[in-house]
Amino acid sequence: MSLRARLGRWPTLLAVLMALFVFAAPALEPAVATATDLRSILNEIEEEVMCPVCGTLLALAESPQATREKAFVEKLAKEGKDKSQIKEALVNQYGDAVLALPKSSGFTLSAYVVPIVAFIVAVVLLAFAVWKWRKVAGKGEDRRPDLEGPSDEDRERLDEDLARYDL
Amino acid sequence: MRPRVIISVVVAVAIVALLTFGLISKGNSRLADGQTAPSPELPKLEEHGQGSLKEYRGKWVLVNFWASWCIPCRDEAPELQKFQEEHAGANFTVVGIDTQDLSDDGSKFAREYGLTYPQLHDGNGDNGHEFGTTGVPENYLLEPDGKLAWDEPGPVDKKILEEHVVPLLPPTKKAA
Image 1: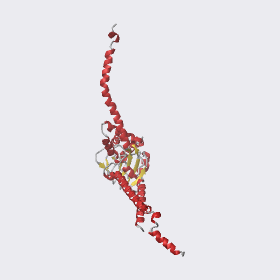
Image 2: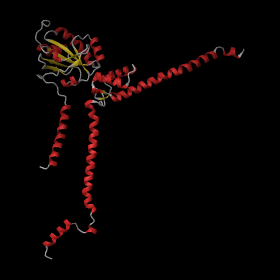
Image 3: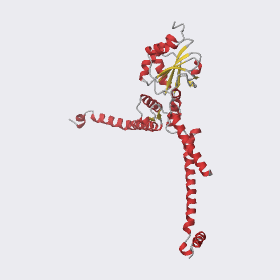
Image 4: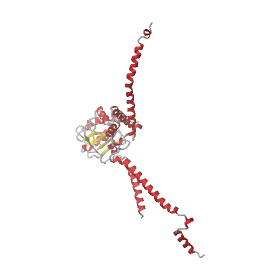
């Protein structure tokens, strides 16, 4: 019996399988990547929005409301909405309070600006205080009584004290 | 008094006032009997446009705060629908406020339970907080002038409604 007869249809089947693998692999790759991207978008959003009922980050919440909110986020992500569009949709449903971080516009901008301004003011005040303190302390340190003798003020006081005693 | 002392006192008073305000504003005081209920404009749940409890002034209104994810609300909804069918008229209506809920979920819930009474959507829960709700469901009976007559911080059923709400309502043609 020839080798071809002994192997039968196996070489053909093998060739078909290999061809399938070569063509199917690139097609499968984006599907896997899309699922990973979706999970990472969901994780990111769940870290950046709140569960309004629980008062915690959505990622930490397990309440029935949080479950519905997560499903809503997943539905929008699957529809191809990006992170900002999903957050906007959540704001439309639950209001601004759903955002874990306040918006950087309008009145809520003050949540970002005020701490920076307060920090700058504190640094300026501290620098001024240190400068003033060093100036006051420096007056005393600059003097060398061992070389220059007593100050005018000390000399005056010494004279007054000596005047009280009849030596 | 030296200016530095005055400034220090003013700063200290301002900090204490700010902390006190923070503590007070965090408080979630419940609407008391005789107090006028807050009635801001809210989106209508199943229709376009805005609605408010003010629109029902002149009627007794049973305000029901609910959400589609709330399990006790599922038992309560048919009871409220039945009560609406028996008592609604020129002098009374039930008004549902779907709170901290997705509007699509709320609409689906209303359709599922065949709720025909007016529905508003309080997505961020602010209106509920103004009433002083601590969860869902909660029920508030408002007099025709919008003042609170009775409230139930939990689900209502036929027995509760018959005992507490019906005696307060004026007789209607339907109820008579």
